[in-house]
Every structure is written in C-alpha cells, then in structure tokens.
Length: 325
Length: 264
Picture (cartoon, rainbow over the protein chains, first blue to last red):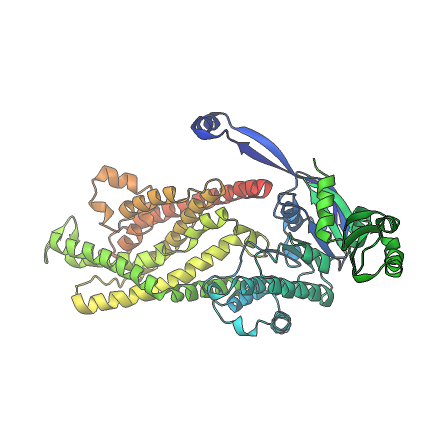
C-alpha cells in the first residue's frame, strides 16, 4: 500500500460579508466566520502502480485532498501516509519521490526555454547526468516535443506549455504523481495525446498516478478505479465498471424500423422508452441486451440497430444527483 | 550547491531576455546619479571644502553610490510577495529546495548583471567627465569596506524578504514597499552624505538600518571613520542583520502555517 488515508478532514475558515457598504462596515468590526468542510472524514487506500481517477464537481474537495496528500495543507484531523511518510513534514526524501502538477499553475521559467527549468530541476532533485539524459530523451519521444525544447516558454501554446510542465515535473521520475486537471483548456487532440502519455508513464515507470479531472473522457479512458467525491465526502470508490453496473444497469437499444410494426408486438419486448415510428428506443438490463436485440431482428423488419453503453457522463450525473446534500 | 548556481545563472539569462528594459533601467540610475553629481559639483567648488567634503571626496561619494546601488540594492526578491499571493509558492514547498537560498541566488544573479553594467558606466563617465576621484589604498579601510558591503547585502535581502512576506496576509504588498523605498531614498544616503545633517538627526539615523546600506560602506572607503566608529557601525549593522533575519524566520513560520492550514 503506497497511500493510505484514514478519516481525513480539512476545514477552512471563510469569512462572510453582507452585500453593500453596510455589510463592508459591519464586517470590519465583527467578522462572521463560517467553517467550510472541504473534506469531511474520507478514507481510502491506494496500491502501488494504480492509476486512479478522482472525480467530483467543482468545489467537491478534490484539489484539497491532493494538497493534503502532497503535504501542502495540514489536515484538520485524520491520518495520511504516503510511502510511509507523513506528507506535511515535507522531508526531502519524500519530496524527491512525488510530483504535483496543477493545470493552472506553472513552474517553468517564463522567459527561458523549458530546458533551463529541466536542468535546474535536475540539480534540485540531484538527478545524475546519465539518468537525466535518459529520461529527457524518453519523455521527449513520448510527448513528441523535440522541436520546442529550446523555445522560450512564453512563446509556446497552452498545450505545448502543459507538455513542458509535465516534463519538468517528471525529471526526477517520481514514484507518486498527482495530476490536478492536467488536460484543462486543451483541445481534444492534445487531451488525447496527454492521456496516452499519462497511461504510458504509469505503465513504463510503474508509477502511482492520481488524476483529477472534469473531463469524463480522461477518467473513462485511463482509470480502472475511480473515487467520486462530492461535498467533501466519498460517495463511490471502486471499479469504473461496477460504477456503471450500480448506477446504470441498463443498455440502450436504438432501432430504426423499416416497416410499420404493431405496437402490441413491440410492447412485448420489454420496457419501451420511446416509440415514434420509425424510431424505437428500449432500455434493457445489461444481461438481456443481446437476446432482446436478437428478438427484434427476428420479429421486425429493421433498417438499423445499435446497442449503446450508458454514457459515463450520464452515470456520473446520476451519482451526483442521488447524493445531493 | 550547483542548483543555486543555476538559479543565479537563469536569473542572469532572464535579465538578458529583456535587454531594452534592463538598459533603460540602467539609464535611469545613471541619469539620477549624474544629476546629483552635477548638483554637488556646483555646491562644492574646486579647491574648497564644504562640511568636510572636498570636490574629489564628494565626487567619489556620489559616483560610489552608483556602484553600491548595483551591489546592494539590485534584487529580484521583491517578487516574493506576489509569488506568495498567486500561489506559486506551492511549487517551492513541493521541491527539495530552500526558498531563502533560492531567492538569495536570484538576487546574486541580478546583482552580477548590474555590477557589470555599473562598472562599464562608471568607466565611461570617468573617461568623459574626468573627475578627480579619491582612491583608497589603505588595506585596512578596504577590507572593512568589503565586510560592511557583505553585511549590507544581507541586511537589504532580509528587509526585502520581510516586506514580501506581507503577501501571506494581504494582496496589498506594494504600499509598505513604497514607504520603504521612500525612506531608503533619503536615509540610505544616495542623495547626500548623511553626516551633513544636524547632529541630533544624524545620531538617530546612525541607529536605523538604512544608513548601513550605502552611506556607511562609502564612508569607510573614504577613510573618514575612526576605528571605533567602524567597529560600532559594523556592530549596529550586524545587529540589524540578525534582528531582521530572526523576524523573517518568525513571520515566515507564521505565514506558512496560515498558508498551509487555510490554503488559497
């Protein structure tokens, strides 16, 4: 077990102000503080080499959790252990093995080529020349960035810069990688490339990766296991497949009929979601999807038939909706 | 150690990317110093002395401030405040690097660049104006001159850093800094030698940290201080270095605690 979190809570004190001038004056003298539970009693364990998706709506507590795990925030209560370190002590041996990449923060030297930041990180982390050349060569190939290594960072596009940020964070080959919305603001193609890279990194270096994202695609394509968090609480922790099973045990069959069908016959098939000739939509339990489809093909004249897995977005939306405060 | 060398070198490279801006900055310092220089040339006529300063002494004093400004007052660490404010401090907390040493290295990189330029400028000024200057040859004064400069570099760094740490609590980091710059302009002695002030004021100024940034080292160079005065000055200056260093440590710990406990 590389990461273990038990009963972690993190509260913030936020001061409130009534609107307008009166409110401002009032808050000068008597500030009202409210305690916001950003993370509320969560526990989970992560094994070495896992690639985990950490998802939740805005303000759910994802980033707070990552900051606690990397040692930036001191937990209000609860215990965290990352590679047997208490992250908050931020021991050099601990820091040398982790990396936190935030899509919205940058560490690169703005006016200099990214290579200068890499070289500095090499010294900061004490990476040997040979290892440095190896990893930079490898990352350059994986990310396909040979041409932009020597261009000042300020001249790079957002996507190119994100690649460089990732590279800079990986120079020391961290064992545990926290990625906070690494694909934010990138176009679809770049997102795809970055995803492939993250998977590749996870496999090749046997690194443990925790990824937060708004884009369901990221999670769907990368992670076997997901942790869903909302209002500071974990509402689901398990395999992505079982999440789908649990919250959406149906598949959707869409049929375009070639000929008019008798509604009586149609309604025998099962639960009909929509029937407006020529379109017919059914939601059937996963296990019965094949037999139902076969029955349709046998009994009706069909122009087109498709069986759809539930959209992960819909599943997640359902999870959020069911767990409203 | 090499990491801090690289930090300094990157800073140096960074300055070079904005060559025009840097040159304009230097032009500004030179014009400022020349204005004061010509003013004093008029006030102290050749062959006469005013308040203990002959023309070579005052010329050396004023031109010396140009060099000292680049050694002591040039820095990058004024960015600390905004870095804390915009959350970039996180990047450093997550790396095995000392934040103080990091900024000190950046300052050194910046100083190195400024020193090179100011030496070139002084050479040009010397070739054109041909002022008679006071050259100190006594090794005694020269070595104390160097010691006092080292102290003033640390003193300025810690004051600067302390002002940046305000960023932990308030986004208004510039107001206090402007007050400091204004005070500095007057009490560091870059406009005039502080000992022409009335005795009572001068005696107060002697106990403040500002005069040790420029006035005190130049006075040592000019050989106008007695051994006792030098020693007491160094002690006061060292006192301020340690006092402000201690304060920086305390404020840093407090700020970090509020930063990591509440977050941004």
